[in-house]
Length: 195
Image (cartoon, rainbow, N blue to C red):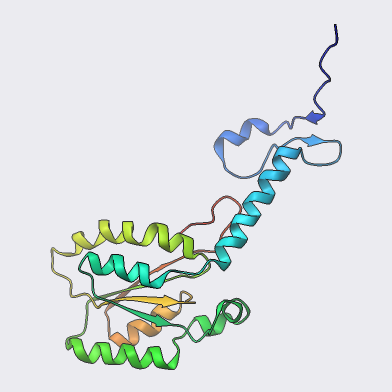
């Protein structure tokens, strides 16, 4: 009777710690390399992170869902003209394009009083995070702002935006408080985290 060949994977002494974290620890080894399963899982996580960075935000779909909920919104663009520019020039993602500044100033003029709060939704480094999390977050938060009544600016959706774009939006709207929802840099354990 033939005995099955022993596994070439040598378990790690740290393997028991895997139940406490999603970090890649205690993977073992096969010769001098990672086991095939661990290697393939790493490659998949890396591919998902890369895809998340390059995935485009569907602004019209996001605006449509906001509109269905009766939430006034405006779509703007950062000074980064496209994704490659956004990735290579972080400074351009921190400020609005000139045409977007003008559109936001016109929006403020049309609304009269200064808002208590302004929400900015920016794709950041993971549009997937915004598409999956921004609306559910607002669905929970906005009803809580009804009492006491907060005056909210139209929700601002910024393509190719970084965190600091919220400062400019808040300044232009003269908002007392700015809440920015942004797709965070994807990691190897999550490609769709919203900050």
